[in-house]
Image (cartoon, rainbow, N blue to C red; front, top):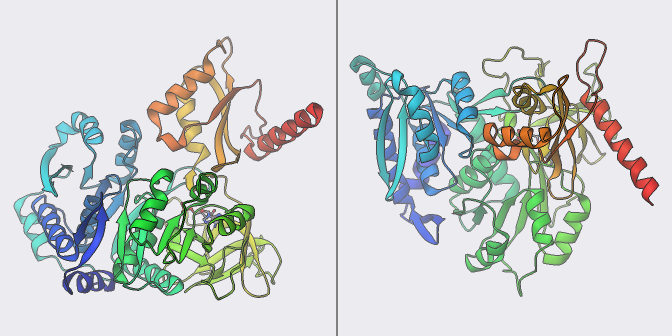
Length: 513
Ligand code: AMP
């Protein structure tokens, strides 16, 4: 049995105690243990075998957690997806991922049942904590195969546990298959770096379909014997009440959350038990970190992570050790180097690409056309930065073209592909522009086809995006333009377009001053 599952079992089998709070009700270790068994049985009855992919498209909830752990302990592979993914995006996803079954929201299941009836879709209802779940089964298995599941061994270290798709540097999203061993190694690094113990209570509201929330906000607290308070999403109005009322000791957040809290009122007092607020997934503006610490008197711990590293890569040490605001901290439990274009290692303070390797870092993508990011035993992150003399890492940019909107990574290609479906659009380029709250926002520039009316085209593009893409991927703005810069081969040049837009804005601002 993998260490991850073995450790989890030990935690759940020891003294019965409150573990996960949802809607102000505690679910105990015993509840979780029996619910995991319940879901395991359902998976077994549905014919899910070791290594099968099982979609998990539910919002943050106790149900999500019970199903997630059940999939992992059954030796199947959890594929968490955005519960608000529109059906058209989900269909493309299904064709690529080929899951054996899945747990989806009512809305997603309703949209899928229709096209999949020809493939013997079975819908089973599972009552777990009085909530209905839709379990969809795509693969039909005969009885012999069914028996195999019952006999199949438990998951081992190198067996895949989770499959996630990340916005790639180019083209299609890349499939990241994380093994039980990689996830366990990442959780150990997090527990050590944050000194997590059974006395800790984390407030977890980041979306569980991302690796950060899974490993930082769920697995690490569970394995360290702590408790967690799960919320479907961040709520500024509820935040301090929960922190104070539930004796929260740490919070797993992203920069946009800190920024929102900075701009909302401070409570009369803040529980002295709150040890730190952790920030991950996107650059944390130095000023925000300073202002947050000053206003609330709580240390901000900036970290740097990636799906390919099963979450955490670097993190700042906890006080009284030295924290460097503006740095993503020190590498924990893995090796990190800065290399130049020729992959030569650079000395401290010199800027280059961040490369990593370690027990929690993947060594290849699943079903990928190329594995160029893995060279000489190192994974090339696509992030640009440097390391100072004391080993603190600073990120200053990225080679990859993805857009980071408040921690959600968006591939410009995917949004462009959606917009290109409209016959009115001749050419389109999607770029990320600065945004005061989310760090970056998605903006689309479209050239209409010859003779096509430009009136209402921007609204039409936006409408189309809202119907076909997850909400966070939809452009914040669409501009209709005459031309988009292209290279000699006709390829659109996003970075040049971005430079032109930024330069254009500066000129306009200068004029208006
Ligand atoms: P994901 O795989 O979705 O977690 O995205 C990983 C990417 O998020 C990294 O490669 C970075 O580009 C970005 N990222 C994560 N943490 C930070 C941070 N603290 N500062 C800047 N970028 C970050």
